[in-house]
Amino acid sequence: MFIQMEDELASMAAILGASWAGSKSMTVTSGPGFSLMQENIGLGAMMEVPCVIVDVQRGSPSTGLPTTVGQGDVMQARWGSHGDYEIIALAPNSPQECFNIMPQAFNLSEKYRVPTIVLMDECTSHMSEKVVIPKKKDIKLVDRKKPTGKKEKYLPYKAGKDMVPPMAIAGEGYNICTTGLTHNEKGYPDLSAECQDSLVRRLCDKIRFNTEDIIQIEGENVNDAEVIVVAYGTPSRSAKRAVALARDEGIKAGMLRLFTVWPFPEKQVRKLALQAKSFVVPEINYGQVVLEVDRCAAGNANVYSVPKMGGELHSPEEILNVIEKAAGEKTVKGGIQYA
Amino acid sequence: MPEHVAESHPIDKYLREDRLPHIWCPGCGAGEIVTAYVNALIEAEADIKKQAMVCGIGCVGRISGYLKMDSFHTTHGRPIPFATGLKLANPKLDVTVISGDGDLFAIGGNHFIHAARRNMDMLVICSNNYIYGMTGGQVGPTTPLGSTATTAPYGNIEHPFNLVKLAAASGAVYVARWTSINVRRLTASIVEAMGKKGFRFIEVLSPCPTVYGRRNKMPGTTDMPDFFKEHTVIKHGCDPAETDIKAGKDIVLGKFIDVDTEKESYTESIKKIMDKAMRK
Image 1: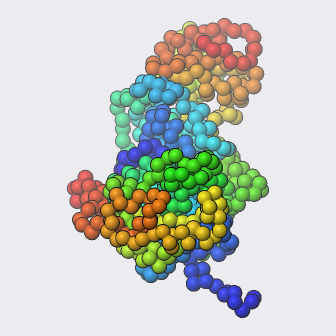
Image 2: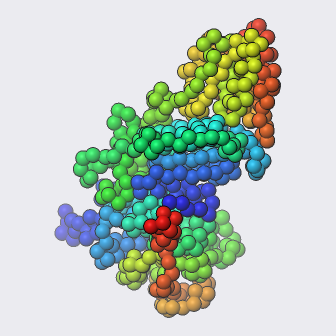
């Protein structure tokens, strides 16, 4: 079922309602609409509502560049709504991945009861390539955990060890009580510091403690790499070419491609920072994921940002130039250098 | 227990008793709205399992949390689009939105007019107390001209919405206005509206002695109810354009719109279009 709502505030609210009625629901937008959705993305995180939001990033801020490429919404995807919460965000780089990513995004959102963001960019969204659509039976689908036991005893926010409470849906007689207010296991408002502490910890920890299950990354030639390009979305395609060109020149270059942008693959980057001399981070913004890379590098590697403000992709040569510069640097100074 | 205190109330089983006492001030009209709504459910012999209550933010936004049914306390201004999603995903649900004038007509005003325009299947009950109560008495979209508020200490200069006229103009198929003292008429109106499809709207003028009354020479808990008793007149079928709430003029109550034609509701329309698309 499809409905075109009056604005993105409404679209986001409507998919939360639809999810509570048992549907797998999603909405699609670009930059400014994503800003409007933040309010109810926060409600989705607080009420723990499975749903998927596709944000096709364009040049920004504000109305920016309709409709050419950008990746300026990465931090907004993570921190866009007020308060502490965790989110999952995936970044495809081809039409085939756009197809593959949707069941994965829904599966993650259902499993962890968390809004999941497909963080696309305009280039991939307007790309035409061959797409192989698998048979329906070959697409693995996960559904949210349903409550068991007596309906009268159902506690909508009582979680077990996995920190994800089973979810009843409207109309089944569970008398669901849910609110955006800080709430206890019954779903009743409880505005105590103790309740806030345990709730916010659980909302974050159910993602933080499951990063091994959630995070998908691809390494290419990273084992012996001295220079590692960290890329996501369409720039990862230019980066792949740049790494191949660098290898042709004898530079030990590799690529870490983030299929999952949030939660950030902190553990993996920390480990690579002890092995590689430097990271090169091409992204179509003035340095967002590079902040995370630098944080995780923790002074153990040089970090080079290759920013594009939006409107065009990096050429492989632009990235190659920075790889060459990084390879030529003999000392590890730490910190971010902007190309 | 003293003899004159009853052990239970007839509507107790529809309430989450472990959440009582409620947060509302003495003299607030929210209790009457809850009573009217629950009595309407009883009278209509409604299946509680199929009821979904969606509220926004504000004093009456807390109603959802006191009702023992599927209840959703959402964000400020967004109960209507949230309810839209619920209804579309499960058309068997009877979806009711209860919220305040600020929630539904200021921050959520756009959603109200568009849900009415679509004839989305839901009953919307607005508790209109002329003011933002929970946040401390700021001017709202229905504050009468000249009234005093914390953000209008010298009198409100903004023209208020006439909610009846707005709902009618936006396409609502059922529009009525009552006050919190007309509990029986309000209950009957809710029962009637529950039995209909499409977008139905009931405005309930509700006293707020603490925040509105105190600043507008009606500080006592009975002052605003007395005002309603003395200055309202029931005119069923009155032209919504004649129902503006103005100083020196009796407030018109009644049922103003009741479209019993073939106007298709949204869930009916979308089912048809989906059948067509699926070539059923």
